Image 1 (cartoon, rainbow, N blue to C red):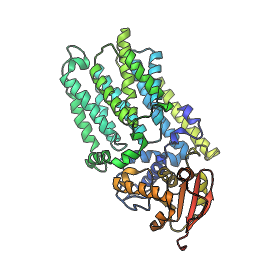
Image 2: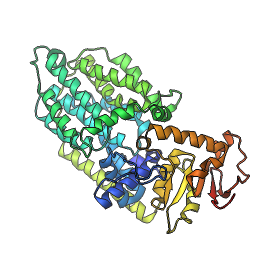
Image 3: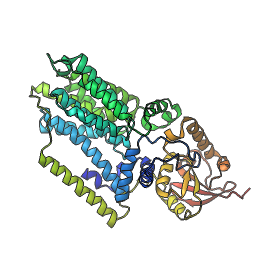
Image 4: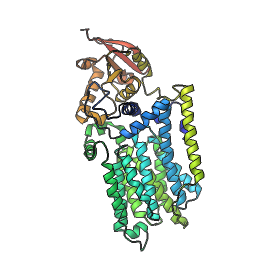
Length: 473
């Protein structure tokens, strides 16, 4: 966490979804209610918008109010650190040596590093890891650990749709404990139906969200949004030429070499590892769900291979809580102080966002009616929302689920046509046209020549900004 906080152009801000997440969180804090519809686009003003991650947006909005983007980075790094600290703690408590536990814990963290982002999935990974640690602790020695799960799912259902997979994990453990108790806990173990009962309570807790059971049908709707799913890169299979997946491959190699010995609970964890591996190979985003159960499976396999006594997972020492709390508080003071003494220290990567064009627009939006910006990069729309809302409205941003598959298909088609002929956007009555220069170069379009009512008002190595003169023929 400390290493992440030392970086200026922070990798946790690489995904520009954080722009509208922060602004929505601030809206929720200011109005104490969900927005009646879309706030940010001129293409779908007021369209119904399901904020299934509203609690995470409030979390980021509050931290942004406290310390701008430094607060966002701090809040995300805390979630990441807690996730793998929980995993490390569990690996130590099952009997692994500190060396092995640290190696497996860091390997799992690095395997997921490609998705260390300020997004709700980061909170889902924390909830998922906490759930697995509680279920494994209960499997090793039943106590009252499971009573925490309904509370976790109540929060989880208001943070991210990943809670649905958490319910499936509960069902897997429930079936294992009730139908195959010998494989679940060891020979002679009685059937255990408590996990299934807790699973019902957790399911009931997930209905306590602003949309009730509609959230489940909404997930199904997203799953069949073919155009949207084909466009989102992280929903495609992973590209193993990318260096970020090397730690996943290393974890997979260790699974092949070290996962031979049997141990109680092995069938359940192997099913979970297999399912998440298949999900991850189909969609890169889901590789994040693979790393934690894979690390647990490796840990148990090493304990069984070395014939080490399996310890009962226990609590963290008071000294441990004290150190963790001190690090969290001092690091928060750090980012707040940086924001006071060095405003703008934490920022988006300038290679990914049109900072120069935004500075020009910022000088044009003082007062008056919000300007309509037609942007040819959807992720730039999310940055525009962060930098200039409420003075502007965008054509499209990365809230693809809100726009819906039909409009998204139409919008992509319009953006492609606009690359060839800017006049396509004239019926939309836009004020400015923001173009990625590389996109124009790929289409071999002469970006220097004014096209009808389009006046080039700003240009740099990254972007072109045209003002649309509606009175021009």
